[in-house]
Image (cartoon, rainbow over all chains, first blue to last red; front, side):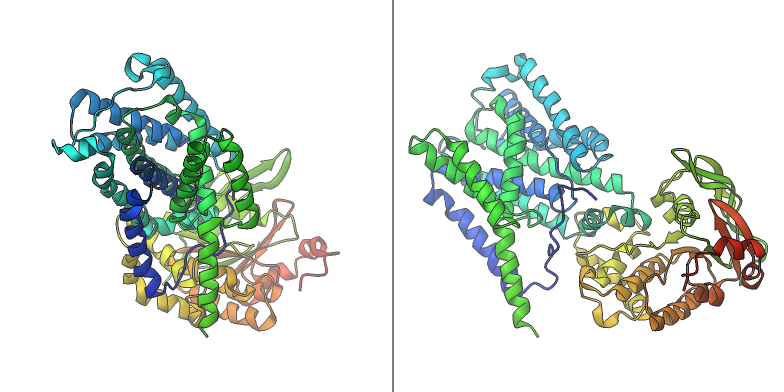
Length: 330
Length: 254
């Protein structure tokens, strides 16, 4: 197996209590609906979009055992394609986002096909190399992408419904269903027969092959699905900002999402939400207080969390919950 | 019943060289359909390498492998598995976070194309329930069906290994040291289990325990330094001068 992606030995909860089953999603939904009242709406949207990004990455990192270090390619390219579709065709934004996500999946097919033939650090480096190539194309093809200036003035069209098109508070509620669908899809994938095979590949690849599973094919499909969900998130992000920066394709974006996923907890799926929330809120609070060393603080928080809670924030909470649960049961 | 004369696995001049070291050297092996065939030999004789070649985990340097007269040389493990050649592993090889039940379900769905259904609920696997219960009962793991494999005791893990192989319902089973590290009672229980499973199948197994080999094998192939040293039924092989010499100084094969 791989060195860097050791599987948390307590990953799936075999017997979920009914309380967890319903209360948790209900609480999550409530929080998502309440969020733009509590924080500045564009920031709220950043949180949910990045949360889906982290969840999509966790599909690979936590459930397939593959650390992608090139997911900026799918996030960024979907952002560009969404922006271009919105700019040139003026379609309602969900359609543009869908176009971006489909593009990300098409891009992921050859990249995934080649990358999954390696694992561990080699997989990470191959995905990074591909992402750098995509970055280079985005940088050079400035007629299309605006190069260093980014893609400016991306319109936000939504069936002529004025409040959504102009007010980021209402836009949040128009965009939220897309992101929630993405999260639901990730949950479905993880809890499907396919997801079971992914976990078996993560736990013990040779054994999965001996059972007749074409491991590379499963990994490629997981990669493409992950890229599609990443694309949904990146597309919504682009529409929300009305602008696509070249940074979205930069390798630091790939790194940030890995940090968020690890912060929340690898192999927990919902940990991505916690990771995105902490990262975005921290950066936002620091920025509005005029502090310049944001990365210094977020970096320190990351190191502290990883040292203190090896399973990430969400992973640690869940682990404690399960231990209490199993202690109560005879 | 078994059709006398058909050959389940045949290798011709099968050779695997690791950096100049001939781990398997020009092996011509013939495993008859329906037989229980043991591979024995001192440590480093090439038994596990041969297993890995037969199941596609290694590609041969030269030579060919056929399964029921179809050439499978160089095919990847998943393809060989789909041809009905299932193997167990010498070092227990399970999925630590899955339960026994989930293991067997996983092996069962490997047959079809259900594995690709990422849009369906895993409850879909409930349709295998009867078969899963049956297999888990056969290997005596029913009380532990919902325990994660990482938490099982060693003997229980070995039993689950067998359940996995069995779930594939393979015409050919390759068992790599099925009784390794087991206590006496477990060994006898496993022998009885394998004997029952062997009905109507071809079994190739590696074991150091001569009691196991003697009780199960119709035919024994002795390997030494990657070559076939002797072949025959258990009594022939046991009394073979060359075999006795090869084993001399390796007294601890209890």
